[in-house]
Image (cartoon, rainbow over all chains, first blue to last red; front, side, top):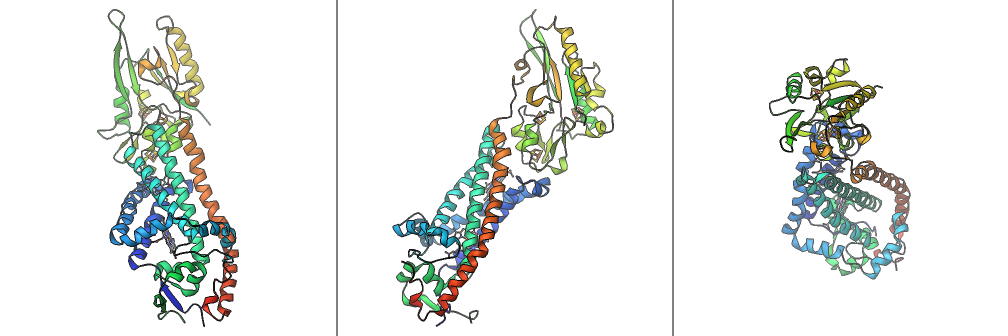
Length: 219
Length: 254
Ligand code: HEM
Ligand code: HEM
Ligand code: SF4
Ligand code: SF4
Ligand code: SF4
C-alpha cells in the first residue's frame, strides 16, 4: 500500500484564504519596512512609495485576525487554546528539536493536531503581532508627540518585533518545506503518511472516515 | 574636503529679517514655507532693558541627528553642511522629531529646512541670506576662519556684554552655524548643551543593523541546513514507502 494515497482534511477554505492574504500583507509590510532600515533598499523608500505601501498594508494586517475570529470562531478558539497549552509530550518534543531541525522524526514524542514547534511559532506570532502593531501605531500617531526618545523607543520595539517575526517566518517556511506541509495550507489536506509521522495523537482522535482517497493529482 | 560654516553675530543683527525674504525669494519657496524665522524678544525693565533676536534656522550640526535618522539619504552632510535632496524624501517625519532644535518640518509631503543654498555654494557663490544681510551679521566661509573671526568679535564686545559667548563651537561635534550670543543660550530659547539622545544612537547604530543582519543570518543558516534536513527527510520518506502497513509509520516514535 502506498502510504501517501489517502488524505486528511486539516484546514478549512476560509483558513487557507486568510492565511495567504495574510502572507501577502506580511511581505508587503516587511519589504516596505526594511526599505527604511536597509541602505541598499533606500531607493524604494525615497519618494514615499514604501511609506504608502506600508500604510495601506496595515489595514488588512489588523483586519484579518478579526475576520478569522468572526468568520470561524471555533477554529480561532482552538488555534489560540492549543498554541498556549503545553503538555509533557511538548516539552519532550523540544528536546528532540535539534534532530527534527535536521530532518529526522525519529523518537519524537507523539504530537496532537499542532506539534510543539507549531505551537511555539503560533504563540510567538500572536505576541509579536501585538508588539509590532502597538509600536507601529505608536510610530503612526506619535509623530511630533513622542519626542526624540519616544520615537527611538517605539522604533526599537518595532524593529525588534520585525526581527522576531522574520526569524519565526524563516523557521515556519523551513519546516513547511522540509516536511512537505505546504498542501495543508494550499488544498487544506495532508497525506496520511504525514499525519501519522507528525501528529499521531491527532490521527488517533480522528474518525476512520476522516481519511479520503485523493482526487486527480495523486498517482 | 572643505568644512564650511555660517556665523551669526547677534551684536550686528538689526532684526530686519531680510535674510528670511532673501532665502524665500532666492530659493523660490512656496508661500507657506520658510527656512528662517527671526523673532525679536525683550527682557528686564527700563532702564536695564535687554533685547535681541532669536533666529530659528538649521545649525548644520556636524553630528546631525536628522542625518542619522533619515532612512532615504534625503538629508546628508556635505562639506560640513547638512544638505537636502527633497526628491528622495519619503516624508517619514523622523527628522522632525529627531532634530534637537526642532528645525525640519514637512511641507507638501517633503522635508523643509535650510538647504545651505547648495546650488549657489557649490559654484562658489554666497548663500542668499548671507549676500543680503545689510549689517554683516551673517557670514559664510571656511569654518576655521569663521570661528576665529567670531572669537575676535566676542573679545571686542566683552565689555558691553560680559555674558557674551559663542554657541556652536563644540556642540554636537561643532555646529555649521556658530552664533555670537549676547547672553546665555536659554535667553535665546536654545538648549545649553544640545545632545543626540543615546536611545536614538542605539536605534540607528545597533538595533537597525542588527535587525537586518540577524534576519539575513537566520536565512543563511536555515538555507544551508535545509539541504541536509531535506535529504534526511526524504530517506525517512522512502523507508515509509517500504513498510507494509500504515500503522507502522511513526512506530519508532515513543
Ligand atoms: C499594525 C501594524 C503596523 C503598523 C501600524 C506599522 C506602522 C509603521 C510606521 C508608522 C512606521 C514608520 C515609518 C512610516 O511612517 O512610514 C513603520 C516602520 C517600520 N515598519 Fe511597520 N507597521 C506595522 C507592521 C509592520 C510589520 C508586520 C513589519 C515587518 C515585519 C514592519 C516593519 C517595519 C520596519 C522595519 C520599519 C522601519 C523602522 C525603523 O525605521 O527603524 N511593520 N511601521
Ligand atoms: C511563504 C510564506 C508561508 C508559507 C509557505 C506558510 C505555510 C504554512 C502552512 C503549510 C501552514 C499549515 C501548517 C500545518 O500543517 O499546521 C501554515 C500555518 C500557519 N501559518 Fe503560515 N506560511 C507562510 C507565512 C506565514 C506568515 C508570514 C505568518 C504570520 C506572520 C504565518 C502564520 C501561520 C499561522 C498562524 C498558521 C496556523 C494557521 C491556523 O491554524 O489557522 N504563516 N503556514
Ligand atoms: S543658506 Fe540659503 S537656504 Fe539656508 S537660510 Fe540662507 S538663504 Fe535660506
Ligand atoms: S539643526 Fe536640526 S535640521 Fe539642522 S543639521 Fe542639526 S539636526 Fe539637522
Ligand atoms: S522626512 Fe524626509 S528628510 Fe526627514 S527623515 Fe524622513 S525621509 Fe529623511
